[in-house]
Image (cartoon, rainbow, N blue to C red; front, top):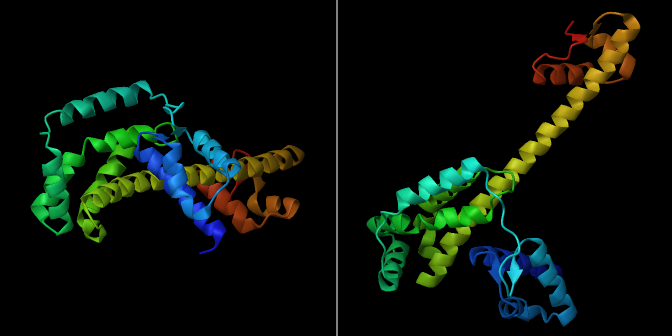
Length: 245
């Protein structure tokens, strides 16, 4: 594997490890992760800086905690109250559940879901403030949890299985955040297009002292008729100085 690719993959692994540990990681863990690359202290310092910028404390508590809205705070409180009745289990029982789930025991997988449910809001809290409602993050995490318990057979031991399940949940939340960002970007692009067409239509309408047709606007601006028609339709036909003729 190329050194650059290995570095990028290791950096992502370390970032997620920090997330899983409550937004903190030790310098020793970072050094161990990058041992194969034999990074200099200067290069490791750059890694520490990168992690800090992504709100992961290195040998200290994370310096960042997103503020929840009042609605999200109320939702989290109510949700955690619902989970208070979940019975606690010992470390030995927990390990046995993971081992049985790895072996495909459906009843163990169902029980493991119940045990792991309180972990989901903790993970969602880490990703709060990134453009996705906390409720949606928890819902996404719960769905990933139900899928994740069924694919633990690839893990080598109970500890790896637990890390794999946590990774599965967190990855689903990150994907939801990424999808939200893509959707917001697409919405912004559409908004920009609508505003541009509206401005062009308004300018031409002022010259002609009446509403303008899509064909007239296309001829005047050089914008394809089909593109103008699509933007007009996607705007909900609300461009005031334009009519579809």
